[in-house]
Amino acid sequence: MDILLYIIIFIMGTVFGSFFTLATYRIPRNQDITHTHSYCPNCSHKLGFLDLIPVFSYIFLLGKCRYCKEKISPRYLIIEILSGVTFALVAYLMNISVDNLKVTVLIDSAFMALYLCFVFIMAGIDKENRKIEKSVSMYGILLSIAYIVYLCIIEQDSIYRYIIYLVFYILILILDTITLKRYAKNSYVNGVILTAIIMVIFTGEYIMINTIIMTALAVAINLLLYKIANIRKKVRREKKNYGEDITYGFYLAISNILNLLFVLAWYKFFI
Image (tube, rainbow, N blue to C red):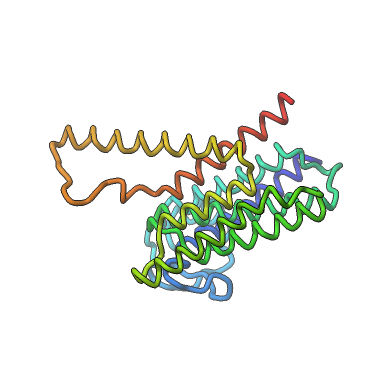
């Protein structure tokens, strides 16, 4: 029965993954993500039910639009599969099974699923546009505040642990508002900081420390490979710093999910 449950969770994860690709494309373009029907970005033809089945539609259509035959990026398939695997793996490592589907377990699972939604969408948008969308950040902030209320009321956790994060929220949002008024744009750094606070609330300080360390290593390796490539090509980039192109939010997301899975696996198999 548990295998059937994980298969269902995997399928649900792929459906979420399909939504992530839609949100990643539409949010930066200020398009509706809930009411507007899905369409092909190339020919704008509305997609039918058979075009929207996660994973299978891409395979059966051979990675092409049914109507204009334009090739569809494989990232849609990759994100759907990764999302399904991540959801199923997290459920397994959290010991979710048919026998322990209690109310608290379901609520914890729902919060984790909604948190993964934030991480995937934020990372996808940042990877494509190097931007932390404010609407996505606000979703993460409101979700984390709801999670804090749940922990303090239902789980009887101490509110004092989270006060400092709530204060940081207020300070960063005020700073971001000032930056927006002064420079007429959102601050990428402020968005990354808000993302980090949301992550630490959901995954804890230990995982967040490891997330930051892994992110720093990934960025350092990225910069090193870039410099080596430029040395070989004898290319110089003047005026513009390559560090300005690095998608820190994307690296934070990957590092956070990997560390979360590692810690959950450690507790499941060794503690």
